[in-house]
Amino acid sequence: MEEYVSSTITQTYVKPIIKEKYLLDPGNHESKYFKSHMSPWRFQLRQKLATYIKDQSIYLAQWQVKYRTPLRDKIFVYSALLGSHTFYVLCLPMPAWLGYYNNTKDLVYIIGLSIFISGFFKDFFCLPRPHSPPLERINLSESTAKEYGAPSSHTANAVGVSLYLLRLLYYNNEVTLVNKSLYASVILTYCVTLILGRLYCGMHGLFDIICGIVIGTMCMVGRTFIKEVVGARFQFSDYWWVPIASLTIYLTLLLNHVRPIDECPCFDDSVAFIGVISGLECSDWFIQYFGFQLVYNFSKSNLKTLLLRLIVGVPFLVIWKYIIGKPLVYFIVGKILGIKDDRMGRQLEIKKQKQLHTTECISFCGISKFDIITRFIIYSGIPFTVMLFTPIPISIVEKNLLY
Image (cartoon, rainbow, N blue to C red; front, side, top):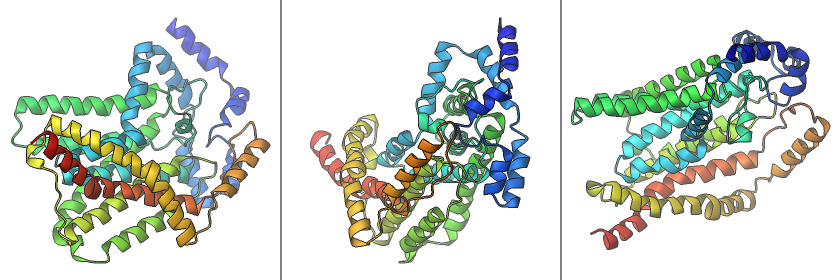
């Protein structure tokens, strides 16, 4: 039966169907389309890399059919949430709320840079995801399927975080060998599940996965080097200009980000995570430069205190991001700084292009500088909320309920 299905897949999905179905996803236009929109050297690089993903969908579809079951569908589709944008926003503050502030900083850098670098290369090379059909996309987010394929940001995050945690575990002499083996098994299971899930769910091919592994490894090694070598020799908190430099450098990177050829939502996550990195640097500088004392009682951190801090802290994140942050930042950027709100113009252009091109992915419709700047500021406010604003109400609640 499996051999029959695989044979049917191979014989059924030929080029006429591919052209009709696949043009709705970015990266699937013919070579001459990209040649007319790219510089010669960028196009040549894309063409060379495209040879590594040629015909991958057929083989991945055969593999998917062979191993697919309802239970595995649920395991892989829901485990993918462990690498999602929302998961990181809600879970990255947890180590900080338990007293592991430096570990939180490391994880933010590793994850944020993995997202940014993988997003940059997605938009630069404009390589498609594996074709569906013959693969079936198993996912909870339609917008994710509308991104380019290589590299896999889920893989980059999973590898970077896993290597970081394994390194911490290796150098922790307080943990017994048995417990180290147990924790390492959990970390590796998380990593392998997230990576295999990208293949199983039809979201990425082997080339995407390999590129993600390389990026995740580089981000983890790079963060370790900067922290232990550069950070040991250069105290950023001693200089008043550090937050200005952080905001300027990261905003410049975002405003001059490489432009994709097709309309693609990859860039939104890059803006969000670069905003978090910049906010972390600025809030960390504030804490050290002004000698701000964190008021969490870290010496008594345990599961009970973590739950309490989640109950108090998470609503503060939601309040900042959706209730206070958006209207406040929009008012400051639009009314006080006088930056023109160009979001509507971009949306109208997208709507117009979709009406004209109903059977294919539309071309890139430009960026909204207003959206980049406001989104960047809103997300940069999350570290301030976690490290400077939530400690006070959390300490008050803990004092009255626990001590």
